[in-house]
Image (cartoon, rainbow, N blue to C red):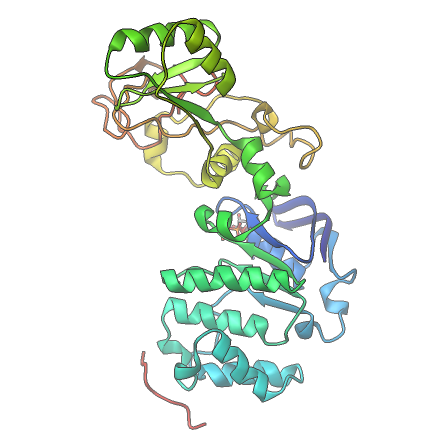
Length: 400
Ligand SMILES: Nc1ncnc2c1ncn2[C@@H]1O[C@H](COP(=O)(O)OP(=O)(O)OP(=O)(O)O)[C@@H](O)[C@H]1O
């Protein structure tokens, strides 16, 4: 198990990791998420003793990494796949690591096979592609057959087959009872790989919970409702009824309605009371990406100027957008106010916009560029009900 308690790292005036406390348990793949510069790599470096905390502590199996006997056999890490001597062959690179830790050469050949690099084992690493380098880094992490594994962006540069392989490898390692901590910016991949998440923003803990709980706590779910045929009167009648009951309704291009703020049974009852038949009443569950975006919007440091021009200004819903059930995750972080992410509106839907000069309008349609403001940030449905807020040398072999 990895345990961080009050972990803090400052570089001069810059606080990279801020009072972070969490546990990474064995038997799970734990996703480590956060925007660029949020402190993931710094945290991982502190776990393996490459950086010293300014305050607080982090332990592996109850001990600081530097006090672990024969640490490489207990903790394996892929932190920077490029940190390899380019003049060495893949096999010699691993062999040098193995010799430092008393690991037999047979294990080197074993892990080369596991990561699929056997055929290029004698090639110098400076001729490796990004994906080959990642595979070599994973091989190095696996070398000591450790119980605790850290992977910083392991699928970076991998082809689809490689991504699938990494996903299965992580799961297999966890199923063997190991502790697996993986950082990634690929939310769709994390949704398939991780079962637990630790999310940080500007060095602080934003969430520590299962993927399932994370999505349901941070998602803006909606219902899709469709009335028979294309008779607009039916839709209008239903729209009035739903709006009067406190729902927010947007039209989708295919004539369906996107309804937020009302549970499905209530929508059904209201339709029945209004004598409107329904051909569709379906729940839309947010993706991990949507939930992640919703939670971390306010902790993003590096944003495209196009987002600013589009007046990206999500409303302040308070910590966790009011959506995190009691008992989940850490206490709210007061200085990192949570703001909402809005799922993109349906393509073609006319959406109100707010521009940087404070004016509003409906010049843009979803998926198209508005006439008076560049469209870049998704201007989504008003989940909070406020319609104005949106927001080498390759074949040279070593002598050996
Ligand atoms: N050696 C260093 N000296 C000074 N500042 C640093 C150093 N290492 C990291 N930082 C700063 O600490 C902050 C956190 O960086 P870190 O690399 O840990 O973030 P990250 O979450 O891994 O980002 P990314 O997703 O882009 O890889 C950043 O502001 C970064 O500039």
